[in-house]
Image (cartoon, rainbow, N blue to C red; front, side):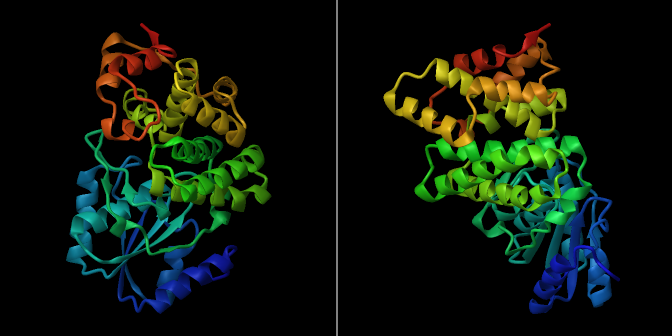
Length: 340
């Protein structure tokens, strides 16, 4: 078979050959053969079992089905092809199986950076229940940027914004280091230069946007995310916003609130740095999101507001450079919620 992405298929093939693989658990969405990786495995004559029975926001219960297949089929290698969900499912399977099995990730979106992080974003009946371990970072990754050509416009928007949020939140995180901030700066530089062209399907933007995502992933792997992510999960659950949309909205209004309520010179300096490296002020970022059509459904009930306030991930909030009380959190939500 002739592959349009032969360079990456060859890289993928070499990794499998060099690891003496006997049986692969192939984790992907149901359209698993769009990029040719499953076909490549078949051509190599390596045994493979597919696992695609999971949600876009994967449930722990679905991951446990993957664990059963991994153990029942005695697979000795995991391949994950897809966006953050597929990669996180693979990582979750390794975590819950308590296995030292190796993972090869082929990311097909420019967004989550899941292929380089120690986190697997999972859910339990719609509520976030992630796992983390340095042992679940995939040992191998193939950055096939040609896969981005098949992404719908909305998916490009929300996955790209997730990378932006990762880079920005990692930069101002209390856990930030010189290394993580270097990753953040490079990621944001690529975002600023290539995101608009990427949305217009300029193929020259594919590779740098995938690099933007990877670098942002490396940044949060060190510094972790902050209030933007912590306050986004209920927006996703209640409104059904894609993760990247929910995060970008939460981040925008948190950022605005921080600027309006900043009380220390140190934080003022940090926020000034963020504006310089990101290329946005909070106001211009909000306008940017509005132009992308992401701010059209902010109608919430008082009960939903209360659920959002009480459902914030406290651990993520501890990484934030400004301490928020429950009243602060409520005020941030009220700054953009339209209460019905």
